[in-house]
Amino acid sequence: MEKFKVKDESLSSKGFLQIEWASKHMPVLSQIKKRFGEEKPFKGVVLGACLHVTKETAVLVDAFMAGGATVALCGSNPLSTQDEVAAALAEMGVHVFAWRGQTTEEYYWCIERVIEHKPLITLDDGADLVSTIHSKRIDVLPKVKGGTEETTTGVLRLKAMEKTGALKYAIIAVNDAYTKYLFDNRYGTGQSTIDGILRATNTLLAGKNFVVCGYGWCGRGIALRARGMGANVIITETNPLRALEAVMDGFRVMPINEAAEIGEIFVTATGDINVIRKEHMQKMKDGAILANSGHFNVEISLKDLEELAVSKRIMRQNLEEFTLKDGRKLYLLAEGRLVNLAAAEGHPSEVMDMSFANQALSVEHLVKAERMPPRVYPAPREIDETVARLKLEAMGIKIDRLTDEQKRYLATWDMGTI
Image 1 (spheres, rainbow, N blue to C red):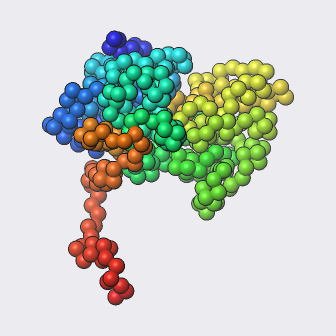
Image 2: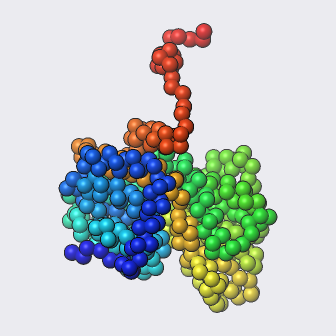
Image 3: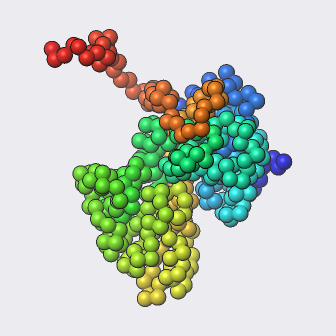
């Protein structure tokens, strides 16, 4: 069994500096790590993780190892791995199989290496680890007690598995914790997506028609930050409730067919397939920029883009030009993969502090609890509140507490109107 595989082990010193920087901005996870180090809740436990291999993920892994865990880790996206961090993790003793620029075959090879370590608990970001275990490595299923899922796309896939009876072990949907999606999805995705677009293009956002496909929490965050940069934000949606909310939030809402004609920058954040297709590309302005902030590279139809193009070339890192038959040029960022991780560094450490605190406490919950029926569970409310309380304390913010009288009033029905 291979211990690890990374691009360049000599990068570890740079990786340790990145991890140190992230750790300084993740006070909640640092507190949890301290307790884990004292209590050793994961002694003898193997954790298998398919997560973006970033400096923030390294801080989470370090917390698990402080608690006694053995960790096997692979990347959850071929372009999101920070190679210097992967090298540092290998030196720390993590069974890490990750490098930037993987082929599809290499990506799944790395997932297989994690599975070979026969984890008791899985941690996933997109559900590729769970789906591979359920489809190709059912031999390890009896060993797995439970798992966690980090992102919206993964939760959707896992709920589909549950609905059809395919899911064979319990999953905690960390993504659905308030202290995850209200902050990570909104503020993290919003800031890091804009960061990725700017690093790849150095274009001016002010005054441009900026189209956000999808108004979930990620789409909300992207729209909010784009408007803050002076862009004219347009929302496309299929959900009438979200579309109505976008209107009430002050954004223009229209079908993608109409937005395609006037948009200058397009960002997908839906979790669905072929959101931007051939019929939309054929209407786009010369110079339109296409980016994706959903988990997989399926939201922009790369097949359609390739078929429409007569030539293509790399203009700069993470920026590819496609010339169409009529001479118009469309620009694809980061191969249609997660632009915030492929072209930038992902979410800021401060927001991942809460997301990964939820991960850490949810994994601890699964290890300590009796084996649960195979379902997708919400993150326990007490974990959510603990993370929020610790984050407020770290920020030096105090809040009020209910008086006994107020608690009684909220718990009864017979006090009536005074």
